[in-house]
Image (cartoon, rainbow, N blue to C red):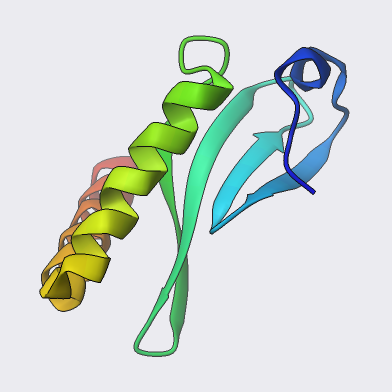
Length: 95
């Protein structure tokens, strides 16, 4: 079931799916973020799109569509490789 913008501030701890891999996450500290969930070559990853409310529901959907559109244009490997590279860069920065 798609998310509704008015309900986002009321969501409690957990992950909520909007469909097509778009996730809204609420952490214990109350942080609310958007993620794009991808699976490539058997590996599942979550790619950060931005924090709520800086990135609203419609903007998060648009950002996720852009990544999926790249994949559907026959550029699937390049798109996911780019996403995986960004994920690895973030993980390296956090060490």
